[in-house]
Amino acid sequence: MTKLTLFAEDIWIADSGELSVMGFRYPTRCAVMRLSGDALLVWSPAALSPPLRAQIDAIGRVTHLIAPNMLHHMFLGDWQTAYPQAQLFGLAALSHKRPDLRFDGVLDDVPNQAWADQIDQIVVANKLTDEVVFFHHASGTVIFADLIQQFPHDCHKGWRGMIARLDLMVGDVPNVPRKFRLGFRAKTKARASITKILQWPIKRILLAHGAPVTDDGHRVLKRTFRWLIR
Image (cartoon, rainbow, N blue to C red):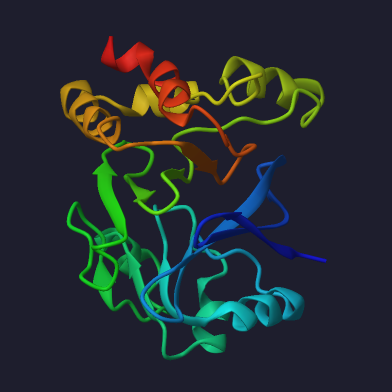
């Protein structure tokens, strides 16, 4: 059963199994953040099971759904059906990719006024997919979808395991996969975005694909991007 777990102050996480992409198994994780009152913002909505919905409804009212990049959109339709009053925000290009969804706003470098006092954000441009990185002020948590990953060493076998290791998807610490490193063709622009992220008072790191970092997050993130900002 998918379990909603308190991660830090006013932020919960839910892990809901794995997705298969070309035979590679990707664990899925969403984050739920409390806004003003009982309003809830759901980042990268995962598979919406009845138990997960009941747990979320028990802590508040879903008002905003966030698709942080062009890849994390698979379950949005189910969430819009379940929460028709919730507003959906994503990258401008995602509305063309998913014309079946109703988008209420575009994500850019300026936080929407509904969460501007509690959550910051910045768009990190990449050829594979632009990604909006979020920072939850109350918990000091920076949130990444795909730009940083950390799979267990035994997650993939055979040739897929070899590719995962070569791509830096697998390791003892979070890392930027090589495919995303190559996607930073405008490195000056990417460096500027990461430099701004490192100015946030980061304590923790949440990853869609990897174990959360619960301590010394700023140092860990600086090490993760040292190949780019050095």
